[in-house]
Image (cartoon, rainbow over all chains, first blue to last red; front, top):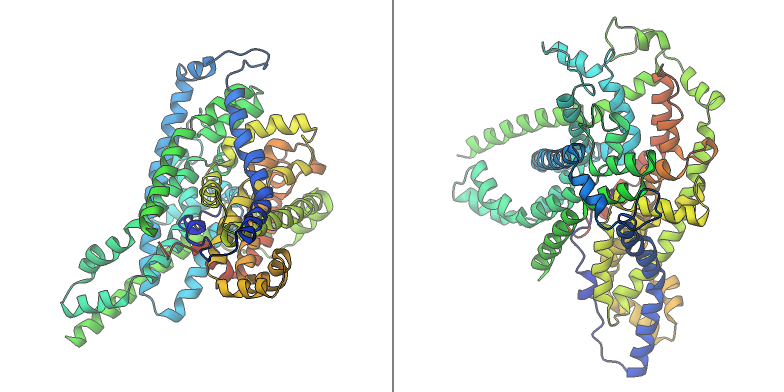
Length: 310
Length: 284
């Protein structure tokens, strides 16, 4: 869930293939060594991702005691349950709202830092990444204490501005807000750092010549900055969609899916059913519902990268 | 004209510093609140009077002392180290070999593997933990911290490989070709010539491997149950919370200390961290 960093460099291996002509024997030994060096990697990919993935599909087709093959009954069962549909709605709502806010705030912060004098940028950029560096399960614990009903420091702060205390974590609406807020807190730095790198790569001459033409700040943003960042914005959004949809830590620590299942996401609900209640096949079925969304996002990310490196 | 542009610049800076202040308040409030809670006496934490955002009744280190003396915190810490060190070493060895092979020894299928590495990285832990639960049970590794050494490389190896492929590609080919012409074999070349040049990229990848391994929460929560097998994240969240009375001071002290290793690493190696994070995005 970390490290969505180099989303963009996937086309690298294709670029760097050897082009020198060499003796064919030399070439053959070269590729043999290359393949040999990749064997541990292939073992990790096959053993820790491909095999478990297909095993999850197999598991999801079994009954609760894993003694009989029941086809798609687990999926049918889930689709007939209101709780599952609540999880689906919450997952989509959470992902959409959280990614949108992270993108808006991340872009704002990147623009703000980019405007500051260069020597000051380092410290602000460095401090901004703190939420992203802290282990999320532990910072969620801190947020839990911020939301705690009687001692909530957030409510105390809100009271300064004359806002009534909110029942964070115990009311369905505010619990969802609370969970999204923590995700935005955690993820905004990643958006900022990616967008800031993008901003730095825009040629300065574009701004200088538009200055001479008398373009205003908002015009430059609309006609230079955003078009130049289009690809990075799209790839980061898709990437974050995957990571946000797969969120587990925040919800598990803050609400455990409550109140009344209103904050369960696919991951936490799968954990609840599969590990906590011991129905592994049903849990596997829940987590596999994430797959179509992951696959579509991955497809578009790859396309975006291909396009930008072509 | 020039004057108006200068005043425009001043206004922009003014707005920017205001915005930065708000962002910093948002980003740094949680760690600040955790830190002052961990230093307050229990009476002050419970008290609803006064200003909660500052320490008024004196600083106490009791929560930290209790953490070491009365809880399993040090056991979790030791377990985190015991899991993280082999995971980082193993993942880096696998990633460096693969990244070198993929970026330097072009062979049929290298591009396919490169794309595969990227796709694999996108498969989240919240999709894989259920089959892992069955597989680890079958291996007899449930409720063992060594189970974590088996599963953590899932996300770490693809990411580090991919980061290193990008980094290795930026090293001039002439370097290794010259060494090979001189008769070095690929392994010698990799160890003696290539790696020393690639140190910044390797540091960036190592920081990531460490941070991901240290921060993992879902896997330890799902696969370890006993206090003596738990790592810091899952241990702090599950075992330090006992009964109905939450000991917020101790809990915050534990959470903060557990955050310290990755945060310190970040503070001292920030430039590597950020270069790893943004590698490639500027090329797009």
